[in-house]
Image (cartoon, rainbow, N blue to C red; front, top):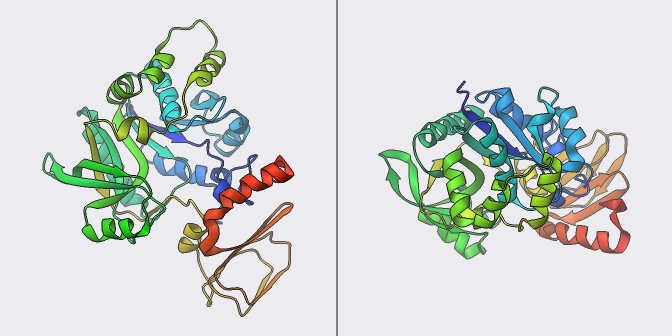
Length: 357
């Protein structure tokens, strides 16, 4: 393994769209949501650990998840867990990791990934990551992974790719970024063949990304570059108090001129919703995806059901529904209306407090 290769796993999200299974105290990245005996975070770590040395993998998350991370990943040290005092989106998260890596290895070549994605073809995925790291090792480029779309999905951002770079057919220059489009626009993107889903996975060397921060997010760059005699937790607390809440996509990727996309197809999903989990789950003869050992169904089809194993659950006459019970909460919602779950979580927080969140 190349000792200059590093992986930054972003694991601070709250996973509100997987509520009520995902809670503030235990978000979806810490859950075995696929029922395979490992959490999404553990799967992500193990995947990258095949090509990245264990000691070169950093986890960036929220202060409250420190013990969860160390329990689920006992092979790492506390120094590999970077704890954010507050949530400030992906740009400050990445800037914090850059700050740490600059102290450890200025020659770091980095892949940045969310902690909760599904990868069906891991060998092909890792080959793609290796190609990207080889390219960024000797090029001043910001690289993102674009996924060949399989449908006109409105839940993903899109990247328009133009001509190839250095005669590498899969590596192209980014022409445009588009946030989650309306259906007709997504349909046009899908049919054109020029657009790829934005995976949120990035590859770059430390010098290139630091230069990008200095150019496009100078206020964040300056905060982390400031000299301080304080302990790291105190310094980071002060920095985050002043950092604006901004994504790396909006703050850097959509502005920089040296952005390339590595066009890929390795069976990817961001597992952002119950619907996306349903798509990749095993199903019974009536296309019901069931997690729970005592579920009895009558005249029901195309449902997502996730309930405690010890509970007897009987459903009759449901079609295309999400049924989830966790702890003290039961959610029953049409699959087509799952975009409202995030709003439901906000409403519950306002009317019932954080007990159920």
